[in-house]
Length: 489
Image 1 (cartoon, rainbow, N blue to C red):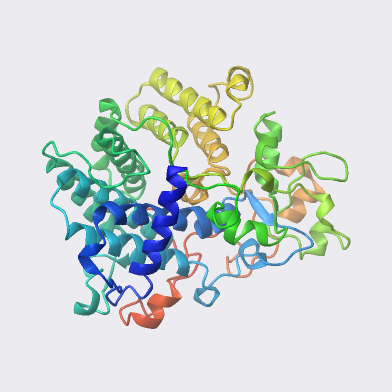
Image 2: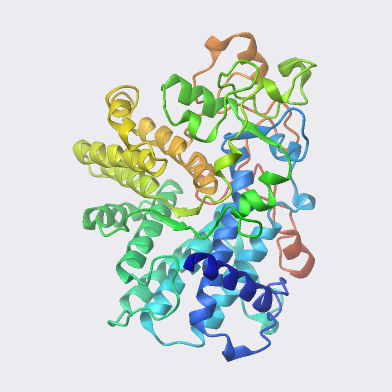
């Protein structure tokens, strides 16, 4: 109950402090210092959770090919068919929540406290917010951002500058810790500074790997040292403040999922989990009503009669199980993802396969446990999920599986970084005609692909609010086929 109260307080503060969502103007703080860090900090967490747990969760789910558009609905045809540009406004709410909500509130808190633990926790969230911004559009305002009226049009910095900048800030904030204890209200990690340090280290690891695969080999030593030190958070980092009551629903359920029966399961995730005999398949997916089997829809195919025929109905595909999404938490970082990243470092850079296997199995176990299925972990790891074959691909594929209905933004980012799942050479129509052309789990080019140039989504267009208010928004519109800086191929 206490966390539910914090959520309502956070929403109220966001309404007060961020009612003007133009990041290039000072937010309206009607009572200034009367809004204390103790009250303000939950609104920072809430703003980040709302960005990653609402719109990013939705479009990331389409891009990671977990979702597709239900045959008899139309709201997300554009996402399924990659018909996305600045005019669609898909990224805009995330952009406003992160800048005008989380990041402006952090700036305000920094001016009201000298407590080094409070400042460190703020920096962890600032780092996470900028990581999300870069992973969507690569370039984003950073060095000149958040200055209000003093700079109404901050320049856009390249993604590498932003990544390295906030990582440096994080190092400095941690070095400044002097024994202070967190004093702000902290419904995320309960004022446990060790957990905040573990969260910071997990963000570092995630970002180091993206820098490495973006060509910055100097981060290999940093990643291996971080894993060797093994100073990470325990459990999952979740914004678990929601309940099955009107006005207190999970943000994705509140703004997206409950409005209409729009989401069905996508073919790649159903095919892979079915092939692996994965008991988690039925956790967030319902069997189709026509014959009680699990069937995914080919990406972007509901309007392509060659792929689905002319009488395609909702009953022909598996729906997402909305019954358990009303009050699900927003996962800011799962223990499962963390352990998969650790397994990757051990396997790629430390030549320690035994440690990689241990972390891999811990990752799988953590995800099974989070879904209430811990008793089924051993059988899965002894059979289809066993440590064998192409082990790096196994890590990546199981991470993709574990991020389903947990953190779709990170699933999409990891697909772009690792190229796993791979993109099938066969089209949806070819696979329908000859299933032997398809490897279960491979991604499939959307059958109707409006702006993906026969490929997949690689980034998001710039925010329409930025285009409207910031004259330094890059003049060339960002296409969804443009890659972010760490996605080097």
